[in-house]
Length: 296
Length: 330
Image 1 (cartoon, one colour):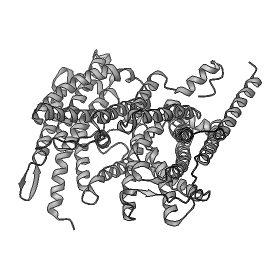
Image 2 (cartoon, chains in turn red, orange; image 1 turned 45 degrees about the vertical axis):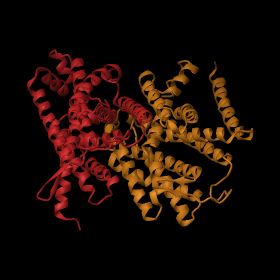
Image 3 (cartoon, rainbow over the protein chains, first blue to last red; image 1 turned 180 degrees about the vertical axis):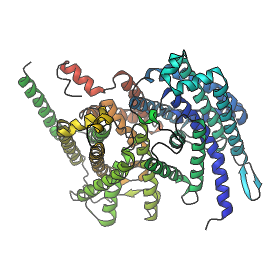
């Protein structure tokens, strides 16, 4: 029989990790919302961010929390470059082509990582096991910090989208691309910036995850599916929805450990996903996902 | 050229190719080359199976390993636990694959686009741990089920030579091609095309979209399930990690898309290009650099989608035939 205290323990750590999943999903969702692009390679971006932070720590001795800022900056630039060079040609293509194209990109990135960095499990040591106790519940410091940063980053982003001109332009474009164009918004530039922001958020999420999670090339696959599940649960384009989707995924994943072995805990998430598709084909949180569902 | 001459030329060439491939193993051929041909045929069949969803209906599957895996696991378990011959096991495995596809189909076929793709992946990712824990409970630790070797045995689908495997999979490919071609040219094929081009329009005209989707997914699953049994017998061992892997799903998709997703012959071209790439890079770079071929696959996938989204086969066909009779092929 499972003790009630350990259930609370699993809930707490599920929520903490779920916050980071939420941030990953926000990054995926803002790109998808603005450009309609379904970016399968986003998991690979995350994986690269994890390795970057790891190598900054290993080779240059940087504090992994400091790395978050560097990786954020680098990934914003990376987002601009990769959008211009690789994503621009397919932005107006049919969705099926986009899916296959980005699957191709993610295969390339993952296997290059496998070639250069090998399949070994790596990790940033010295931070992952720090924990403190509140009335019998252990709280992992790295996960708590990661959770807090994820929430703060999401709040900053939503303020940015509401208050700044470029933020408003991004929202307008996500809402209705053609109308945005009609009122004089430079939709191409807005899409580029939104893509860079989404990539940069993946950078933060990757640097955060690197602190408490093993780093290996296939981590890209592990996370991309969790992100998509969270995005579908939360509803496309909604930041709040993506965050909630991430929290639900984290919670379900963590609670699955109560009944399933650790290494197959994701099965709970996928079963949840199939059930959601069965009963609420458009996600738990809201509007019909025309953009996602349609063939364009 | 006269239409009649053209037709006879075409069917003549086809017959010649078939005859050539049937005689090929008789000419002294190394097991290595034979193995490459076996894999080309096998992946071509998988690609055709993928096309029945991806090409006919525009539903992108990234979970074809679940169909292959169910066939492989079920027939192998029947063999090692109940001594059922793979010749029977492959039908039961294919049936298991079909029932699996019903579950998947019921959940996913009302979905379109990305949802379908994600659901197919999720499905294969669920099946893997389910079979792993079941096999562990049978004391097949790590899920590895070796197929006991009994020497050359037709009954147990085992040969020391690769030639019988070659003939089996080649014949299977011909049958699948024949069936696929027949369907494409029947009214069924027209319904599929209508659904692919505009599902809502087809639905509003009274086409029972779900029914046709189920037909396609069942056929696709049946074929991939059969391949699963063959794959297990060829490798003499089955692990859920291998047969339900995303790698198999990716290979299937790449073969179909690179070759041409809307043509039943596309995957043959795709497999004929991709399998040798894999074999050569593996031989050249060895096990020390895994994944070189996958990098090349990724590049090919991105190139094909941007430069010739119709795939290599259709492009070739167009180049060879000029423009006049291309209208019928897509």
